[in-house]
Image 1 (cartoon, helix red, strand yellow):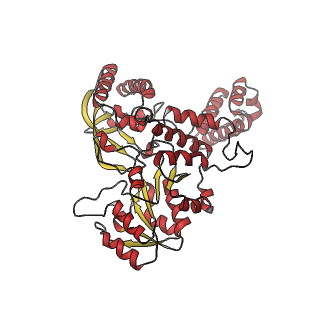
Image 2: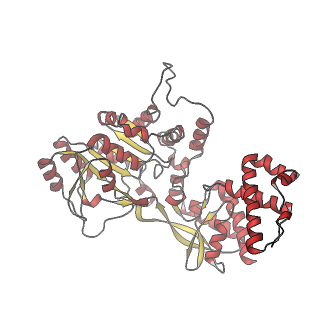
Image 3: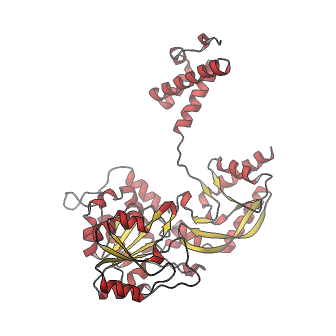
Length: 455
């Protein structure tokens, strides 16, 4: 039987200057909880596994390690070397310097989130982005919620509860995380009225339904992260809008990606833009703030003020409302487009528009710095549910460690973690998605990982 009398008490340990340093760093209540957990574990190991009773320095070391483990954030910055620009698992769009500054500035103290500086009375938070959205898109008004799924849910709840919403079967999509258009429509209380088939819908399908049924809204859902190929067809958006308006029915376009620049100008397939939806005559358009728009997570609704009025006062709008941080970030991101500087200031568009020559040069610089590896031609992708199957030419740094999976694990445990990919037993790093201010840390951690892999 182990001699548990050798295990120091809490009071004895509290006299140790090293423990006092721990308490100073972590606070007394949490430090004492960790210390008691460590003592309980020491007692258990001694009784069950015949382990020796550790000395005070070891107990204090374990206590400090436990505290660090408890307080280590689970959300941490990473370096994205995958070549996927809008990597949903890695937080989608990185923010511009100006957007980060706006978020930092507005969150550092008090602000006029719901205070009218002119009248000195209570104001509305919705005004902070609405004017800029109208200026940018030409819409009568705009409204921001916390994500695009919430935007669609709010629109349907406010405008079509217990009413028929017309949608083509070609658009009954499920995107990442199990977000299904039919489920969202049912959750809103709207009745799903399907037309067409999985691969084909015709304008007469819309015409027949609008003529013969009581339809409150026509919903057009962007295909997002899949592409219809082969024997398929859908009417053009302006045709659908014209047909719906003939019967006095509003059209809502769930655009999803939020493209405000034409991706075709960068060697990619054309992604429908917010401006095209407005030009087609859509009554409301919803899209994400953190996809191709390149801002923080948000759901943005623009369109006719007569419809937005009902949306703004719906009870669900309060549950989905954005905070000061989101509004500051969205308005700063919109400003980049208004100033015609999206390509140079918004990271997503900077990556998309980056010349292939600069990517090749960067990959070669990495190889030269590391003293090993090969530079290969490769492909980058947009990701984030945008432009499925579309890729961009790139140049990759390829390393050939003995155990590629183990090497990736070493990189994931780096500070900051590096996320890369494996192809043909080689670990690949795409310069397109490594942010300039992360490059020094990226190369430093790669050197450390290579040395660890060799040892």
